[in-house]
Image (cartoon, rainbow, N blue to C red; front, side):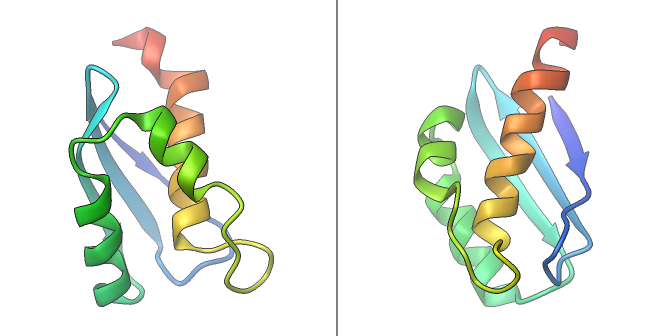
Length: 86
């Protein structure tokens, strides 16, 4: 399933995530720091969503959040709101 998430408190305007069998198959940040986002994507591909949530949730940059933290929030949203709709 591919879904969009509107992050808050970061430069990126949108996070697009693809999940298959609870593993991340793609991550795309729209806007923001391309190098940071490419690194996050490479580290997440093929990993279980729960593992990524536990690694990235709570990482702070400014304003008590960050791109990694917002990705964790996107995955939590997927688990709570979208997963059962597949």
